[in-house]
Amino acid sequence: MSDTLKIASWNINSVRARIDIVTRFLEEERPDILCLQETKVVNDIFPGDPFRRMGYVHQVLNGQRMHHGVAILSKVPLDENLNHDWQDNGEARHVGVRLPNGVRLENVYVPAGGDIPDRVLNPKFGQKLDFIERMTRWSETLAEPTLMVGDFNIAPLECDVWSHKQLLDVVSHTPVEVEALTRLQQSHGWIDLGRHFHPAPARLYTWWSYRSKDWTANDRGRRLDHMWASPTVAAAATGHRVLEPCRSWLKPSDHVPLVTEFSF
Image 1 (spheres, helix red, strand yellow):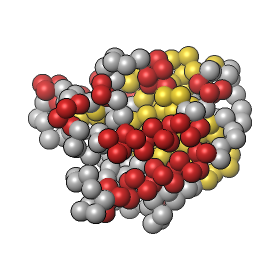
Image 2 (tube, helix red, strand yellow):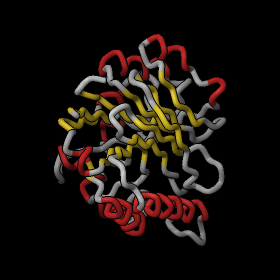
Image 3 (spheres, one colour):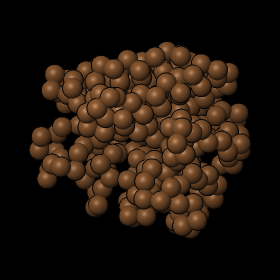
Image 4 (cartoon, helix red, strand yellow):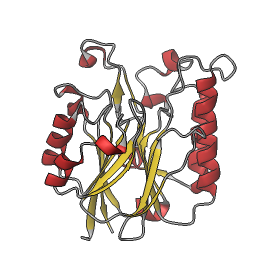
């Protein structure tokens, strides 16, 4: 394994439907490791061959038909495949591995939480909060250098959304979700690499709704995707980018990729 490592994370919103833009991304960016969320495919029919042809021969999958699903595709060896059921219902929302340098890599897809920010009126919202609480309990016990990436489905800071005032009651930016995510971050001393390299209030959106015919016209973005690192792993990070132009590619995901480079 080289001294440098480039790791990407992307909610692809169906890997089979968007295999062309995934391979384009890999050709242009050439990360060593790609973490995907919302793959929407069972393991048996995951399109592994295009990735193998590009050198991503190490593939760790946790798939589910039509919904959810996560995958780690790598040019470097991966060990100790581990899946956590933080949703507590069998949904495929996490896959974790160990890298050759001993760092754990956790790829997670937090539930969106429905439309109503009330756990009584909307059980999905309660499931989302419980998911984050289970992650927090796990995080408190971590004793290893770890990088956690994925679609957290929460934009925590006021500058992480296009309008803090208008989104206070909208799921993904409500105070109760932000408080839950803050507790998770504090439970292990996680470093938010996005804001480490691009301090607030710098623009750093990662998601734009499909509902807008031209996402660039009103630019109503949110920062839902994140890369968090243990302090020792964060110290090895040399750069972090959000690839906003990918949102304009043919048949795009509503999310864009994140890329962080490390020098261990």
